[in-house]
Length: 210
Ligand code: CTP
Image 1 (cartoon, protein in one colour):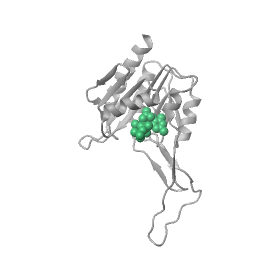
Image 2 (cartoon, protein in one colour):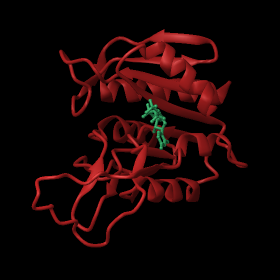
Image 3 (cartoon, rainbow, N blue to C red):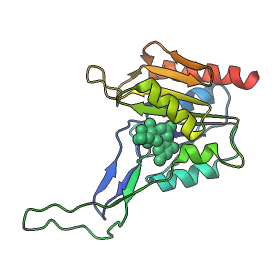
Image 4 (cartoon, rainbow, N blue to C red):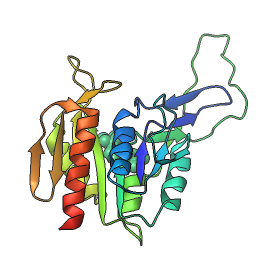
């Protein structure tokens, strides 16, 4: 099971709020797992990436839809949560387009938290043997990712710095990540998202064969 891409949360019948994510890394991981012979369900938010070969794709839009599709894909040996799930959705979504006030004012949007899919999978009765999350950070990358791994109960976290202005991660074909496990933290050299996916799948295969 692999989640990928952003989620879109409707504000009204016309507008939505979304996270920034191309889905490139998640799709590359799903493709690499399939090439190694895994049966893969890829649960993807709206992305421009083509569906990877040999992978069953479930297209979703909101975090709740992604959660439902992820839980429906259990039991699974491995879960890789690479999606940039929106943390918030509208407390009161309007079924009609919200009209712009004539007085120049802007509406205040009341938000509520979305379910945490990674944490839910980690606590699930049929928890996958290996649960891997991503940590998108803009500061204290490794420390925050280590804390996130413990808080969510994931086995591994891939941490990336999404705040770098010199080489932005979003939409790029390259990335630099740290792999965080219970053994500590490994900095991986900068590589293409495809190479990072291949490297991760090697590590997954070694771990499952241990
Ligand atoms: N994630 C998830 N469901 C959510 C939010 C995040 O499954 N509602 C997963 C992501 O797919 C990723 C991991 O949790 O694997 C960390 O996501 P990230 O955006 O880095 O962290 P958040 O949990 O949103 O925490 P914060 O925004 O406070 O950094």
